[in-house]
Every structure is written in C-alpha cells, then in structure tokens.
Length: 171
Image 1 (cartoon, rainbow, N blue to C red):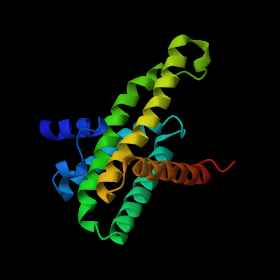
Image 2: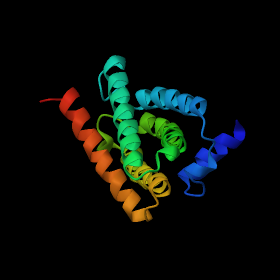
Image 3: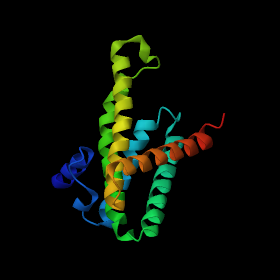
Image 4: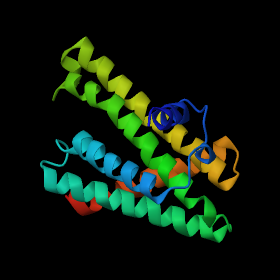
C-alpha cells in the first residue's frame, strides 16, 4: 500500500508514470472511490451541498473516463486504460489532499488578509500543477510530448468546467 502511495506522489512530482502502476480493476475502483470522496469534500461548499457536489464529481469522472476510453481506443492503446485511469484518479486524490488544508485558509474575501491572498495564489498554483500532472499522465498513455499532454489536460479542464457550470449554475 505504501509503495502505491509513493507512486502516486511521485506521479504528482513527474517522477513516475502510469505504466509504473499495476493494471488492476480493483485499484482503479479504490482510487475512483477515494477521488470521489476527496473531490466532493473539496467542492462541497462551492456547490452548496453534498448532493450537488457528489453529482458534479460523478459527472466529472464519467466524462473523464469515457473520453479516456474512447481516445485510447482510437489510437489502439485501450490496454493502457486501467493504468492511465488509475493514475488520473490516484494523482487527483493526492492533489485534493494538498488542497484541503488550503481551503481552511480561504475566506469569503481573501483580499482581507495576507494569508487569504497567499492561499488563493497557492490554490491557483495547485490547479495549474494539476494540469501539468494530468498532462504528464496523458503523454505517457498516448505517447505525446509533455506540451501535448498539457494541452489535452487544459482542453479537458475547460470542457468539464463548462459542462458542470452549465448544468449546476445555469444563471
């Protein structure tokens, strides 16, 4: 277990790749569940309640895994799905765990304190870093250069956020 945690941390530091993980449906299920829990905790306040946050997380995972499945099939690398999906879910858990303490520092008006402003900068930095991590995983799964993986990650980020914004905050 500790070895797996180290792989996910190393993946977030760009020192490990999806192929370093076992191709295990059980491990994918566990990281998916952990990602669902940690992701929901991270966004629950934004969505005004547990039900909407959980639905948004489920939609995000459904979209992510569906697009990954289809895209890997299109390039005839579907055998990489379990490892790539596990890598995306597991690294997401690590990033969510780092974000959680930062949220305690965020207030409704972060400009009111130096701590709040610093927390916002760190939060934005973590979002940017998460795009790099996803790009790193994508580049290994699809044999892209890192910049190509980051471009895919950014496109997914905007698509998922647009879809969730449209469905949950239609105003």
